[in-house]
Image (tube, rainbow, N blue to C red; front, top):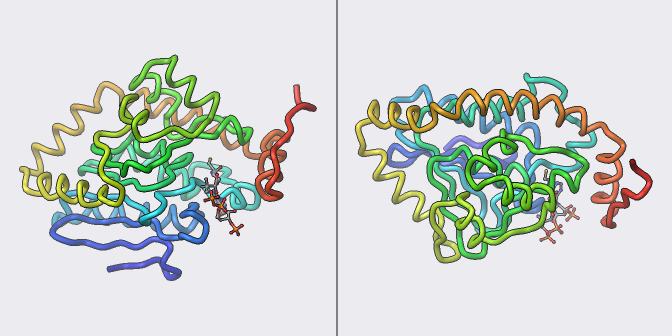
Length: 260
Ligand code: COA
């Protein structure tokens, strides 16, 4: 098993399945720059390793991830495509091997949008999802402004993105974000079972089929990521975002009354 020195990302390979674990429980697995970099490095290694047939991304038993670390948004906002978060977003749709997510607890921000790029998603019945980009003075990312309307229709996508409220595993399944709801604590087992099946499939046929399934949306995803990325980086240093981030740090409700 490889680990990021501080253990916030662990990488394990068992039975030809690479398991990436988000592991910063004291901060609800909020993602730091170094964690994105570790994920990118591990996924590149998985892509290059013929012995890896499938990748699972998971969190801890109580939380998948609370999304990007809000303090990092304030102190180290990404400013170009070379940033680790941009590289992570780029590798998600480019990844050629099966990518499976196992979710327990909160999946917030990129914790929800990364699921849109997974081939299979299993979530415990107590999982909670949320995309509070507007609430934070930001805008959708990870091509979610394209993928959500494509998966569920504009009406439902607007509900999830504009209100930015918490939603349940039932709604996530109904809206097409996840494949299956498991008992609480059983999402990883379900993901491992699926990954074990996929690891036995003929790999070239699997890769080809994955790319064919995604061929029709590949260009639109790339275009959405480009446009969103530029807007998102500008929003990160906007006065609206500054108010939202300060409110988070001060544990108070943000107030956007003064903005036009
Ligand atoms: N960035 C930075 N710190 C975060 C974080 C994030 N995304 N999410 C949680 N934390 C920190 C909290 O500040 C707190 O730190 P502290 O113990 O030093 O005060 C710790 O993690 C525990 O979080 P807390 O809010 O007390 O736990 P909770 O169970 O009441 O709520 C969440 C969990 C995930 C619902 C809540 O923390 C939350 O909404 N986080 C922000 C999510 C967010 O806006 N992400 C960005 C999306 S773009």
